[in-house]
Image (cartoon, rainbow, N blue to C red; front, side):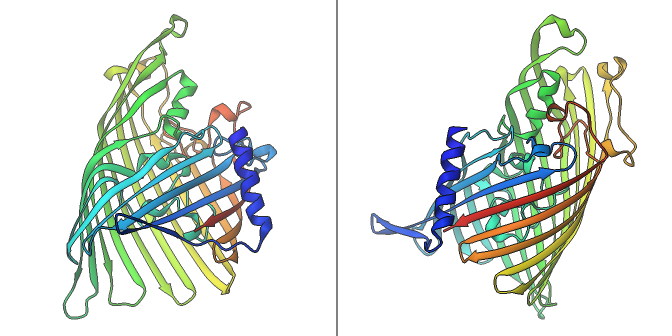
Length: 414
């Protein structure tokens, strides 16, 4: 709490100064120029019904902070290295446990062939690798059906390597960009999925595993039109302790879960023309987890899509809107099913979907300082075996079917 208050005071002091000028910093190390960039954002969320994103938003909450700093340099014309430290607090998530967000070496042989290695941002859809860079986006919150902020750790990076490149097509057919990658995913135990399972007395010590995938995007001959597709496969294992659902009074037992299947397909398109930008994405995430040491099975089918648009009506003002559609089918098999734990298959029920209509105004007060005011009008709360923003632990009186939310977020970058 003290760290959050100190950060808020510093941010507010910077904002109130008004005349400050932020810019990237540079210094020399062994005759190499090191560039330093950073960002900090602070949000406030108020909801009419239901607490959201693990915060006490029904009374208004400012427990919505993130910041990062990165360094990068070019060793030569083909080799670049860099790293970023990142930290956040989102209600009960993050809890100011800093992490090495990414750290890589990038060697570009040709325009059509390059290699990245280290802890590398995962290329998945339009915005996965830039979702934390709030100053790049119109919206305070990206569409949560595809980019859930409470599950940032699940897809943000892998420890491994990428092969990537750009190929110019003949006959003016545009350009193809590709990325192929493999590595190890390692989730924070302060993320949304571990927090969701804590309601059952399950506490992870580790969660992660192999992930590999590819992304292909086509900058078409039609100026401003980009289309693409991503595929991600994972093999995740979680270990920790749990209260036995078959003997709740028997104390804690060891807990493990592992993937029988875990994959994501994502398709996307973006069109820009002058001050107008329109984009849309569809993501299907299928996870089939063997839980409680394989005694039970939990297949989930998560589907999300959105359509968004933004238009800059003045130098310092941009307006945007999107519709985000999320649904989940969750099955329970094995010992838990025999014990009466229900499956959830009807996506028309509020517990199995979230439909979110959003309007946003972004004001660029300075080149490095913006404020966003955003309204969310949600139907459903998606309370199932995989999270998407609404958690029983902070909604002890149960859920209501509709939620209206006000999000105000400001960020600085240099």
